[in-house]
Amino acid sequence: MYDTIIVGGGIAGLQTAIQLARSLRRVVVIDAPGGRSAVAKAYRNILGFSEGVSGDFFRQEGQKHAARFGAEFIVDEVTDLSVAANGEFFVTVKGQANKLQAKTLVMATGMADPFPAIAELGDCLGLSVFICPDCDGYECVEQTTAVIGDGKHAVQMAEELSYYTRSLLVINHGGSAVSDQEHAILNRLKIAYHEARVEQLVQADGLLQTVQLASGEKLAVSRAFLAFPGATAKTGLLQAFSVHIDEKGHVRTNPRTKETDHPNVWAVGDIACHSQQVAIAMGDGAQAAIWIHKRLLEQENKA
Image (cartoon, rainbow, N blue to C red; front, side, top):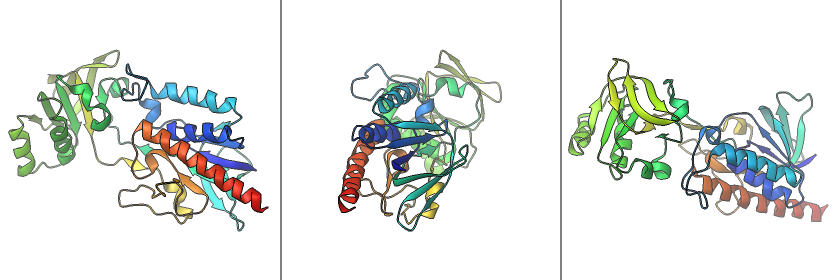
């Protein structure tokens, strides 16, 4: 019996584990490889890391930190969640013969991003190719920047990035129609438009040099942003519970405690409404853990 099972070992899940383990709670983190933090090579808007820090660094250091205080880790996939009549939770793990049991449950499963199949994209993510203008708009200041995306989403991203740079071009890789109104925005901002598929990103050590189109044309750029629809919060495991999921697919939580509408189920990080910032994910995890500890104390005092 665990005090808490945390599903997802990204930054929010790890911060939850650290805080709970330091509260002398028996905690296990179950994490399948992948996730946004696993591919982010340089967060540059985090206090204390002005030169950038990778998601991999946070994951490795977070695991060591939490383990130091007794947190356990299982690298595997959770396939099912259920709740007993007494309110305790059962977690089915793909590689485990027996279900795991816990008094409380934390969902930190994050987002699934629709990364396009473009050669060498993975080498550039977080270094010269980005997905979030709130996090990384600064990286395109005075840089020639391509927005690689689909239809209106690419136009919207380019309009937002025009605050940071006027040297912009849009590549409609997805091919969805761009309206006359959207073309007018591009014309007003003097943003070049290409209706074309990207074949490859030409880069050196993750630094973008040119975008090669399927036609063979090469466009010289030093930064790029992706703007594709379809990023989804990974909430499938929560279907068994009475949680509220908003119109964008994120889990509603109590803003003070981060608990969902289902008692003793918490949600932290990008799965919730609507973090998508490392600093906020950390805050979610610490905040949730504090309230989980309080709930466990209440249960123990009643026993």
